[in-house]
Amino acid sequence: DTPVNVIMRPANRFVAELVGADDLLRRLSLVSVAAAMIALKPGDTVDGNEPVIDLPMRVRPVLSMLLESGAPRVIVRDAGAPVGYLDLPAIQAVSIPQIAAGDGA
Amino acid sequence: DTPVNVIMRPANRFVAELVGADDLLRRLSLVSVAAAMIALKPGDTVDGNEPVIDLPMRVRPVLSMLLESGAPRVIVRDAGAPVGYLDLPAIQAVSIPQIAAGDGA
Picture 1 (cartoon, rainbow over the protein chains, first blue to last red):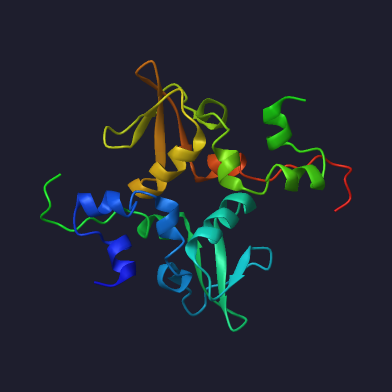
Picture 2 (cartoon, helix red, strand yellow):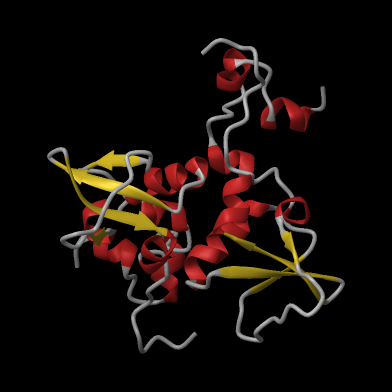
């Protein structure tokens, strides 16, 4: 197993506690924005006033930016061009604890 | 000034940096859910499947619960009865850095 997988998808509850997998912020500091973002579709518009970050970036600092900006989403740019965004549902999707199935709670 | 005010509303940028006021999570760990929540209005309904917390509680752990639950809001109970909720806009409202006016950036 890869080190990131051990933290993101611990094999059982014991390993989960050992690596502190219940530490949401530690996990979010491991997830790349590129993997978590919702891609913009052709025709989607971006308001020049929306908060923006540039890849590469991890999710954790973008969560802080989302909260402090008060905006509903943070725009993600790659090589200067908007390619996607992170909003609450997108961050929630990578926040849900994922313990491997088959390990009795 | 009260200790909480020094952290939540530092008088100037120097004090802000000194107390780490740019540490959003530290600030959220100081704000009570009772102060941050949106009150339920008469007739508002609560789904039994919604995540719920009981007062007293600080905002920071509720942010984690909101993210990990995937739900759009966390219901707040007081003495066993639902009294309000925390959603992204409510947490954003207490996340915006507040440095006292009049201190040149």
